[in-house]
Length: 406
Image (cartoon, rainbow, N blue to C red; front, side):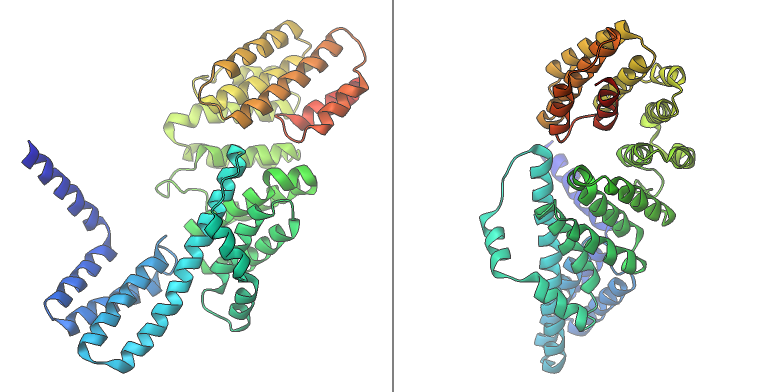
């Protein structure tokens, strides 16, 4: 059995390499080099570099692969004593190393900040922070721009995306990122463009949207721009991520672009993963119906949702609240609020920040439900309290209802 397991592991390793054309050719070049077949190795490496240039940025590890190929080519020229080509290749390898480092480093730094925001923690790398203190990316990128350097656009995008996380309340970083993406997008494949959509969406939500409501429109503009570029089918170039679908629909609903939301639903409904398709469409149509004040129709959609998925469980409950409130179904409303409290307290998978947002929504939902059901005015202090809380679910709608009741 141990020998069989070893064979299986070897088979997995082999099949993985067979799927990766770069690794196949790179391994061949290294093996030829080890057998002193320098010219043949150099020819394979040159073919690799030519292919990489034709498919620039298509591979997520473009800079890493190019750096590896150039490094091995340096070994070939050194072995051959071809010092002229060795020097030229060393210069290219040196420049590629900088691009490789900066692109990966800036993306990693942004990911750390994003995780900190999502989990409401502060875990930084002291070494990374010290690097940013002593290195001035702005000056370096200015040089790249002025010298019309080949990889200026991608490095500038990664840098501005990092800044949107580092100084998330500074809208200048968002607009700098947007400007370069909108002007340089034709240089990049769809996979990169989807990442850029993520960068811009993440820059807008949630900090800038809470700071200035104009960013609700910005988010919708971004969604429409990238929709026209057809970048959202990122799962095997066939399916759209459920969260992407929901975010875009909700972004349109928030600013009352109801027809736009429905068009998006109809356009992409058949590209949802089969296991999440029914729930996603029913939830989005329920939300759309609620915005159109078709509350009973919305309840019909909600009743079709299977409440097993955490995100839909909470989202659907919030949509129920709105419909029950608008239809004056207060017994159902208070029962649903109580059930949601139990759901939050018993859920082991819900992030604490999401649970806190939900608890705030339930607290303010209870206040407006009590006031309306008893035909009483809402205490003005309750409105001010809700306005002082930056982030909770269905905040815009709750604040509107509170203002109607004071």
